[in-house]
Length: 434
Image (tube, rainbow, N blue to C red; front, side, top):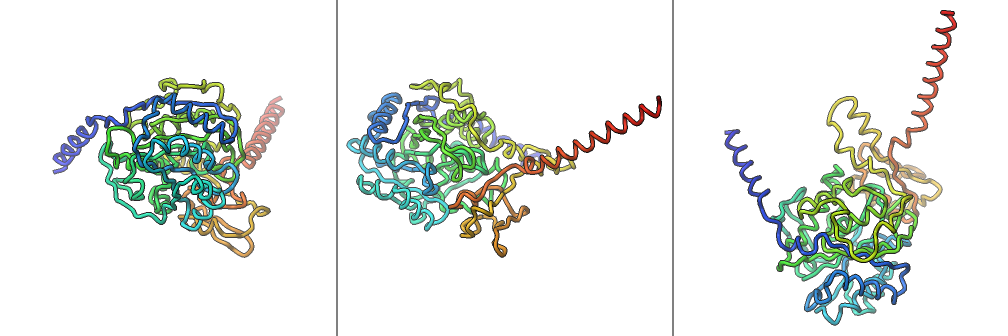
């Protein structure tokens, strides 16, 4: 019976592996356009967007299409969200070709999203430009089964009806670091389409599984595509990126580019390379690239416009990628326990900045934070290292660092003391012999 089951499973796997990549994933999949942009002045944005469209050769791509603009509207703090100026200038540029253009996103909760859309001026500026702005928590949902390419973490996704029924989604991420997942870019920005994000954090506690789930969202959107052309076009804001304690509490870092392409993994390969990172370290990139036949190698991309090597920020401050490699460690044994401990993330609450608003407590999907007397405490046994607490903190009071660096001073002290006594013992031994 077991042999028969294994034989059937192998046959099914061979059929999956032999499936041809849908043609829509081959369209300009390795082509990326880079355009220099130094600021967010409307005229400069408009010229940069025009050049992106020219480089990609997609002037007629928007003709007759219903289009959804998907910004990064994480929070209304400076340089944490997609500038509404980009959305407005893009709308002006393509509105004569497009049938309808709307915008939408969702963050932690319905209320949090409404606040962000208002305070970031995304809602105000987009509506003034003639766009309807949606909070996806208020949208009707449609179940989308993932078929080809096959899913990696989720068999189906529940997407907003406005997204499933539209012709084109223009993904507008911002280049930023992320305390829980090191990097957030094109693939992760589509996480804002889900209304059950907190559940996903609990379901996919392993960082590699969570990143594969993010890739599944991209494929779920494409599953609703009725044509053989891509449904997702990404234009990434890398003008003023965020380094350090991203995606909300970091510091601005100028890169000076707009990055555009149809393959989200290709855009992220370039984006993370500009941070002086190695794209193969990020499972979200690997998962999309593998399923679309794209090598995770920037030298294999056809980059049009600016020379990306001139924009790599060698000293870009980003979280240590070792925190993502915990999943690759052995499952059992003393070494596994020690290694996993030191590659875990330690959540730090800055008591001087914390105003006890309890936003982090409300938005922790694992229920790992609580208020005890006059401080916020973290239950390390419950923490899933998603960093939703840091994303929701309006005061920049929360940061994430690897446990290794927290324990490093103690390790250095222990090693130093041990070395001193070892040297002392050797000297005494030599003196006794003489």
